[in-house]
Image (cartoon, one colour):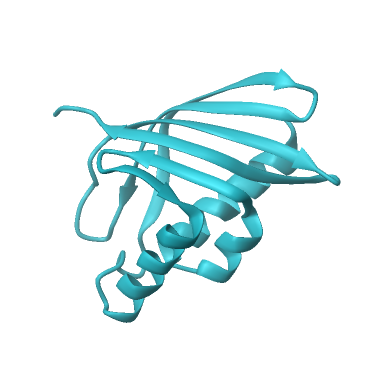
Length: 124
């Protein structure tokens, strides 16, 4: 897969774990949505929730990181790619729950942005 896409995806996960909403805004499409166990979250609502959790000290602790257990890619169109697999957020204290995910990435104007994220926790 494109080295540039892998780099952007890594930056997106780093920004998420760090709670860096400014970087997330740059890496996510303006029409980004996340679908998880609690339903659909639109971009603005999700970013606001992340910012509030960071401010309240309820976000991931420093030293946390996202790790893929399994990752596959599939080109949908020349500038549209899906990523799917399983992964988790590991903190200094614990391995997070394993989640199954599907991401939709789109390149516009030479820049990759994530458009959709669908995820669910896998049973232990």
